[in-house]
Image 1 (cartoon, rainbow, N blue to C red):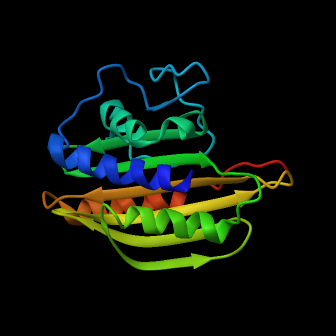
Image 2 (cartoon, rainbow, N blue to C red):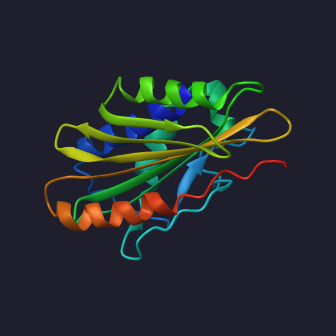
Length: 195
């Protein structure tokens, strides 16, 4: 599952770059997920909150590109959301996942880091064990720069739930984007799990 989430995040960054991150939300949706029937247009089952700046708009086309990168087996357990403000060159994604029962948070985080590194330069990686566990890094892919934050919580059922937020920007207005990204990443809630 964590490879799928990292692949989705990296693919979103790639899709953003390929589209010039000029995509516009046509339907006002906030992301995409898959339901057991495989309907990719279903509304997401959002589990974690994140404070998106008011002027940012949903980018369902970009989120769909991220979800498309997730393997078929992981789709029913993954939610991908994307937002941005193309005029400033700022973008964010949130990938939520449910990992395999018994998988440990450090492994979930490391798998995410390693897979993300296949599509982006990952620097300053830190992991802190706890309830929830935390992971952070800076990321670079071409002209896009930014940061990623992950929070992983395991319920009493032994199933880890992860939320990874990536916030990145191009050269249009990096100072404003960095400030917006700092607030967005700080606001990422921990996944809700069974106590």
